[in-house]
Structure formats: structure tokens, C-alpha cells
Image (tube, rainbow, N blue to C red; front, side):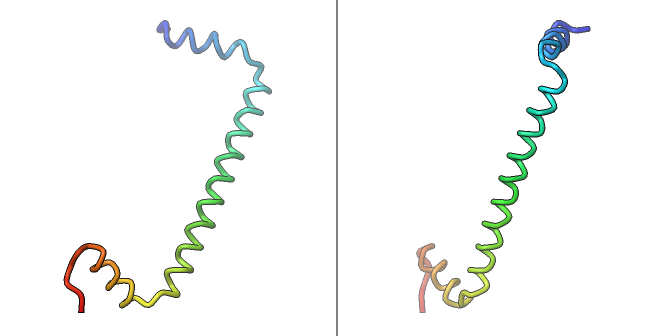
Length: 70
């Protein structure tokens, strides 16, 4: 067993399994909350994008890029 592996194993021995599992549950819950928030934000962005006039959006992109406008 390497020193690094042994040190990690000793560190785990200091924490009861139930405590580690609770910490894992808390972190998973936080990740799920972040995922749900991101999903909602993406849905909102898509909703706004569907309502826009595509020609107007493209014109704005060309203007912002410094290209010719009509």
C-alpha cells in the first residue's frame, strides 16, 4: 500500500460511515439543486429566444461584430 493510499485510508477511519454517507447525500442534493436551477435558466433562455425576430437578432450580431448593415 502506498503512503498516499495509507494516509487516505487512515483519514477515512476517523469518520464513521454514517457521517460520510450524510455528507455525500448533502453534496448530491446540492448538485441536483444546481442542475435544476441551470435547467430552468436554459429553458427560460430558450423561451426568450423563440420569441425573438431572427432577422433582427442576426442584424444585431452583425452590427456588434462591426460588419456592414443594411
